[in-house]
Amino acid sequence: MIDLRTLREDPDRLRASQRARGEDDTVVDTLLSLDERRRSALGSFESLRAEQKNVGKSVSKASGDERQALLDRAKDLAAQVKAAEAEAEQLGAELEAMTMAVPNIVDPAAPVGGEDDYVVLDHVGTPREFDFTPRDHLELGELLGAIDMERGAKVSGSRFFFLRGAGARLQLGLLNMAMQQAVEAGFVPMITPVLVKPESMQGTGFTIAHDSEIYRLPEDDLYLVGTSEVPLAAYHADEILDGSQLPYRYAGWSSCFRREAGSYGKDTRGIIRVHQFDKVEMFSYCKPEDSAEEHQRLLAWEKQMLDKCELPYRVIDTAAGDLGMSAARKFDCEGWIPSQGRYRELTSTSNCTEFQARRLKVRFRDEDGKPRVVSTLNGTLATTRWIVAILENHQQADGSVVVPKALRPFVGLDVLEPVK
RNA sequence: GGAGGAUUCGCCUAGUUGGCCUAGGGCGCACGAUUGGAAAUCGUGUUUCGGGAAACCGAUCAGGGGUUCAAAUCCCCUAUCCUCCGCCA
Image (cartoon, rainbow, N blue to C red; front, side, top):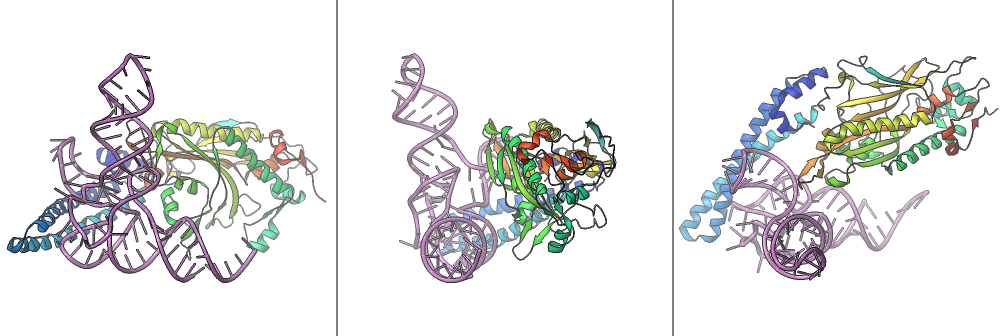
């Protein structure tokens, strides 16, 4: 959510941001005039209310004709106050709705353009040369008895799967390694709810009404999260954090649910794009002035995980037009997928600045004792999709897969062997 | 699912025949006095949000609605927590 006070002082910042996102910049003027009207309505209400309170107080002290006159005056005022309040509330609600629909102001450092205008910041590792024809992750997963898509589809439908045997062990090991790294770095490990209330979803920056990715349980007005970012962001909603203790860092382990509507035909094979997967997510609450540095730290921890998995990857800086509603800046790490001959997203870290925190009312007390809005950031430490990259990059000619060294203690196996 | 009880300014709490509640007290915290320094003691301040340069004004007693000139206080709905009953793993 945009800060109206800042908007009044510097409307051009939002105009520029809207243009960078390829969105309508005239909302700025609409917002400003609505804000002006609301404040003036609020002013009328407040002065009427002040008068009403004064008259009301004198009623109890007066008697006789004087009392009756005051009562009449008070009744009249009560009606006026009611009308003025309704007016102010109406405008307030309109303003609120409009404000909530405006995406975060993008970091001017983010590349301009759309989906394909990302900037590659870094390449780590080199895609391996195979002296045999590499199998794709599903073929490997089936050989290893690790991934069962067929029965996933039988039981739950397309884009569902079972991880079994070595596959289940690999995921548990991977996510446990992520959790351990996070704990060593000072994160509080968390296992979060995956069903959340609408205000948690919307506070985090997802639009319940229109987002086609969200699974809904209308019967209970609950929503399945697509990432533990949602419960972790809402965790401190309506709270004032201790400024001297920031940053607050959490590592959330949860299943994630995505409808993947409109992606028919894309990534239909295997577990690249599925309706349900598991993820360990870093989430950080910090002071606004520290958020850019914190963003770099989250990126560094992501790279550390990828390095431990011995995966070749590149880091991209997402262009303004491809940022989600909440993000001011976003870096993705994309791992090399041999069967596709291209890089696919394995991690994503966003600096949401004060956008989510303002919606969720998460503040901190600074040195002066004043409450200020915090900044929030998130980043991926590991997901089910990583299994794709691990299987494909570390496969051997016979279909076995060498487990990366760092991961071995967590998986309990050095090599995953074909089952038959 | 049913029946009761609870929800007050960070924490504990006063306040329920509606009107100096403009919410009192304690703890904690901050600043000051006292002290060689500290403890103790004393004093002052301390909900949050919005508007305003400020003085100040308005809102805020779980949330929403209602009654009234006036609601922490009365009525209705909702949420959360606790107790009991039922049902289920």
